[in-house]
Length: 139
Image 1: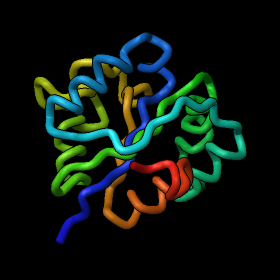
Image 2: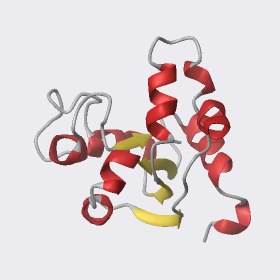
Image 3: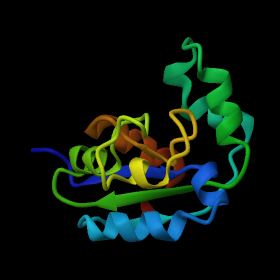
């Protein structure tokens, strides 16, 4: 059975532009419950560790530079079939290709500055949540 929790991150572009509240309201309106949340400013080492799966990709350096450019807001969200539901709610990576009404269509600037991260599998959701939160942090 698909998991009920996933990780999302409101990225520095959206957080710095004051869009975090609107994005959170959008997520809650889509049936997600916030289980844990915090505001952090990732170090280069933290961003590189979190995105290590992309280390060999051409966008790795620009991604880690972007993710350390300002505060971001990781959150654990809960809902039935959370990973798939969140990915549908946020839309395609490129906001020009995202469905109307999705987070990225509404709040992303570009494919690179796309407002929000979402785990892509139940396994990654669990691993990514542990990166930012201890078990004691979740309610």
